[in-house]
Image (tube, rainbow, N blue to C red):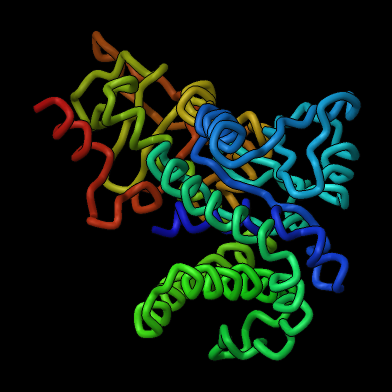
Length: 353
């Protein structure tokens, strides 16, 4: 439900953005959506345009088809983008700006927008579209009602309780969420829904708010790269795109490129293999920055190694009994294990069956 909730909520915030701003409750920055990878980021952009009344925005030229003040203006981030223009877009006040990043949030975007994780499917978008149309139709027919709700929003500040008072810096965003929920309360009432049922529906709308706020808070600080990197490794191994072999005395190792070697403690990959595996993340972050983040997250052991490319030498046996010291990135095995305790070699074996 949270995937559909996020998409629907953002579109509805865009629709009432102008009256919210008029009464002093407008958002001070735009929205950043974090997709799984670059392909997913472009798919989300297409679906926002097709289902949620969004308009694509080009950074190089802001002339032409500009979003209206109730629409979202959408751009997929690329690390070659002009940083100043991306920041200017997120500060846009004429429409709700949306920047979509694939894989992980780039460093330059940290703290620049309200961050949502987005893994929505087309089904999520189609369901959100139906509700968005109900919301926008009601708002257009009941402008005075909606404006009265916005003017009284401070009276409803306790409607969405922050139990531990941990998220005070996001109170403006919470007020925006509250406004949308109050409008839905009026929509349900207009539809003749019983009070008890309205209460249940409102509780469902309130439910995802604090987990969404926690995502925002997490991405306002240092982003933990471990999950997106782990996802890249698991996907490559499960699809058989990258081989995997155990290191051991007496066993020859001839394949090292596009291959993962492992022992009891580490996975060993060449620098070029790591670049291939993590390719989906490299549209939003440089390879050097990615490796720095992996070291900061304690995924990589490079003590006494080459800090320029984060490698250390490992002695391996080649065919015909000769040895060679090869440079690898040493990745701690536990850093790539699943929540169920499966390692890459387990996933590789399952994929072969």
